[in-house]
Amino acid sequence: MGTTRRPLRLAPSLLSADFADLVTAIRAAETGGADAFHLDVMDGHFVPNISFGPALVKAVRARTRLPLDVHLMISEPLRYLSAFRSAGGDTLVFHVEASGSPVEIIRATHDLGAEVGIALRPDTPLDRADPVLDRVDQVLVMTVQPGFSGQAFIPTVLPKLEAARRELDRRNPGADLSVDGGITPDTAVLAARAGATFFVCGNSVYGQGTVADNLRSLRSALVRGSQRAVP
Image 1 (tube, rainbow, N blue to C red):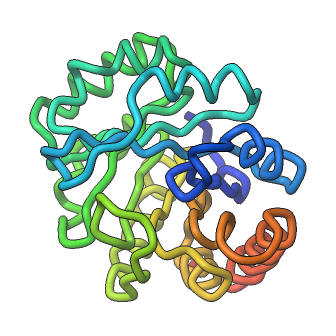
Image 2 (cartoon, helix red, strand yellow):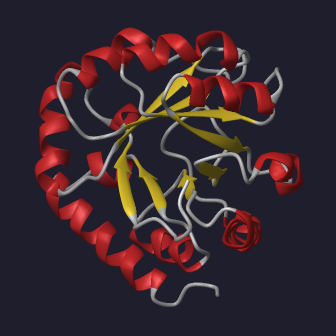
Image 3 (spheres, one colour):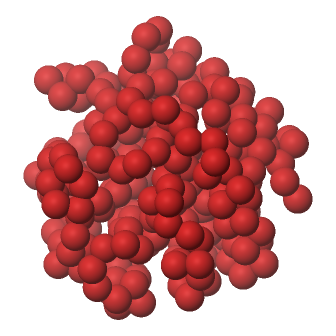
């Protein structure tokens, strides 16, 4: 963990890509200027949906050198850290609401040589993550309810995002402040203004238009927002 803010980064979410042609989706994002890929892991228990497992992460790892940000929306993250790290995850993000000790999960992830992030649902207060803010490499503030892509951005989460930025600047400025959910050019401006540095973007990348044009629009938006960021 560093002492200055990380650069602004865009991470297309492969949950929104065409599963039948992920190679094309990966290549398009790489050439379009993506900084990382985001992979949503759902167990059907912590959230009411089922998605990727280690095998899919391994397949993506074999096809890109970009960092893989693995979002563990699962009930027992500690149990699966090694599998997702071995599959190629560079950052493993777990939910503070999941079972297990956050300190133990953070220590185990770092012992595996991966970065670690802690995620909060929109209605989870930032205080839940406060004891470990200085131990993590990323804080993910969900701007939709986790579990499904295509949801609308929840603007009432912005004050929590601003509060997280202030706390990270005070205690752990080298950690990413990540947002996930409903990130479009319009909402990217708001999130960047609130201090986010890592932007998960799904339908706004893999929806209408070309991936390159969509990433270009998103990049422009988050740069504009960051220029008016909360101090």
